[in-house]
Length: 414
Ligand code: SF4
Image (cartoon, rainbow, N blue to C red; front, top):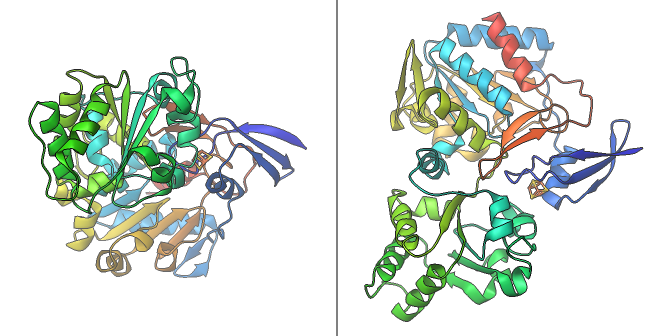
């Protein structure tokens, strides 16, 4: 029995202080994980089987069938990647370019605008280690890290002692929550919880920006000008501040620009940074990689040397308007997460799924190919929610191929 060091891929915090006690290929114990991470490491879900049209097949035949579907398609769609390493994502981009395919990931309907603004240098950002060592004010807006990223507050943003925050949360840190409900994070930061009605985030962003520029702020809901001014002052006085942007905020705003203006107004007297609360462990990695290669973070269509980009290339639009004639899904479950009317479109075109575990999409896919769990059974590199590169070291030998290897074989078979 031995204890191995390990990086957890349960969420985009990519905790790198995890210990796993193994006995052969059995996990005896995990150390430092939250419950979410422990479930991910144990791989509790039922493994995917290798199938063609619902019948079990050899991996060799399934890869051959996948290659035949993709090479016979005129406009294939390739989608997923939040739970894939950078190496797999790179292979998928190569495959999409060789097939003139549509290529997209979950960021096109979640944190994409925030990551894009950071990559384009439109807003200051920082690392989570900067937050641990320097932040005196953290604002959680439209997110609940106590449940979505359970070790966020203890490792980085609230409880830890840091170089400049030796007295931790008791004296040195202020955590603020703005949300539509009193979440578990809001319970922890009870003193500075601001409850707002759904869809009113934009109004509060504008009101705070007004308050910071010397105007009397007003909102249409139950929050007085005095309360808004107090909140603006709390933010203004921060030596080092971080705003953690959750999906509640992103979904509430048609555009990200008002947040950028708020940060600009704050930074006339303070020092604030934006960090997206990315969910899947390497969603941000895909955005970085595609940005490096094409100048876009998502929603592209390859066409020879050219790359088309825009809402018309998004996975939702491509499926909704029947533009794709085949789909390859990697490490994702669109059938379980998309609106029903759009997810059902996958049943009308040949669909291939590569994933370690069974999910809703596997029930309609024409070809299913099981892959190793990245992080536990296969290694690689990922980008944490704050943009830091993290190496993943597997601690099990796996009988399954990595998704990178499966894509390599599909490319060779085309
Ligand atoms: S916070 Fe996220 S990365 Fe850290 S142990 Fe929990 S699930 Fe894993």
